Image (tube, rainbow, N blue to C red; front, side, top):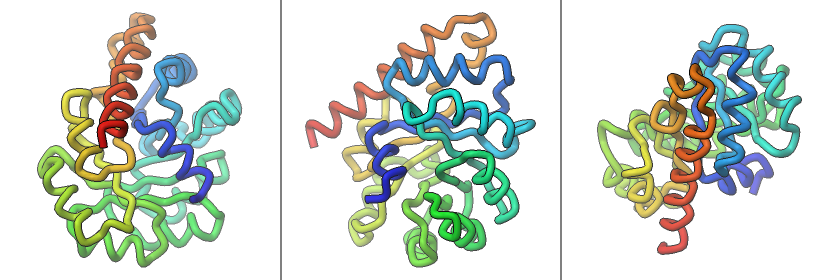
Length: 214
């Protein structure tokens, strides 16, 4: 297995950070790491995303695997990869993004909703697919796709929380992606990073228990 993908599996939870203020980014990432979430995806629509990717990648070295999300074109993929991103995630299927990631030896994950999209992305060279938005279809949909497509690693994102993460793991997800349900930006604004750590700890506990039960 690709080393970056293996690290995503080890984390079990990928934190999606969107629009994070520069002065909070390192503290939020550290709070997540302390809670066991060691994979962070900074979305490409975040202001100064390349600079922030480099800052996080340089600050945590091998402790946290850092990627970029909401990537819609190959130019953005290349820019963020050059800044230090180790994986690239999209909300939709863009074969040029996958091609760019393959060119630079980086992990790529297109957003998909159907078996046809999942196959297209995987055949184009994606390492895994992001089932998005997961909340509109639920764990049963992911499980139904995993039936005939067991060879394709799948990660649900969008509406995943501690209350339903186990159901996605049971359905066959190798990890889950989470944004607002994982990172409370109001807590960060008031300096309560312990709250983020506790939520991260709960997320990882739920995922680990679901894997053990499976």
